[in-house]
Image (cartoon, rainbow, N blue to C red; front, side):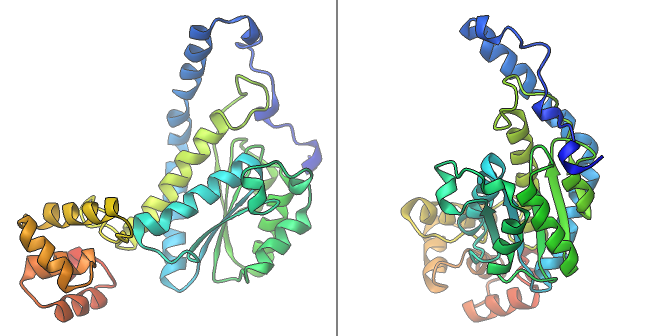
Length: 298
């Protein structure tokens, strides 16, 4: 079957919501809730593939590569959202995880007609960011048939880069182009073709797993604490102090002194307080442990 002949389940009519416009408000939210409840179960069968993707992404970053998300419309917006959350949550450089949406940043708020229809545009958006075989690309397309995403995946494949594709139609053209297809059968939407609903929920859940799992594997957490966050505002400064307190059992005053001594570096403060070492020794321990707090404490 040719890509333009691919029939996406996400574009089909849901048999149980043909009378959607006749439902009362309670019935509408009830049917939406029932459909959303199926998403986690639909993702469960591909958890091994998601884990495989996380390991490949982690290896890519450890060897100096970057992670790219690319998509159009809702799919692109979700990728940009996940990428944008990595710097404040995990203290990453903004260039390490990048989200690309067809039509550029303007498309985050406004529709850009025809932006998703060009495979060449997907390729060119990667070229503009110097995408190479050292990087990892995640294509995001609810239908699995978006030309923009397919063009990007093909370019990445031709460059020899590792790829994954998040789609909601198993056996999709995008999935066939990727090294690791992450395809969830979410079925038809309650509102035909509105993939911001169940498909978007599934994509968001998978993106959460990819970024969080990767950052945990990279040592961006200690226990289940965000120890690499950047305390760039009052809320995050308070969170950093609380994290150090929870990780070390130290008093608020001890934590305040440790953070002041190391310039607010949460990881460094934790190692200092748990080992009794100086700031410079704590930083060296973390360097040798490749940023993993648990290993730096040994």
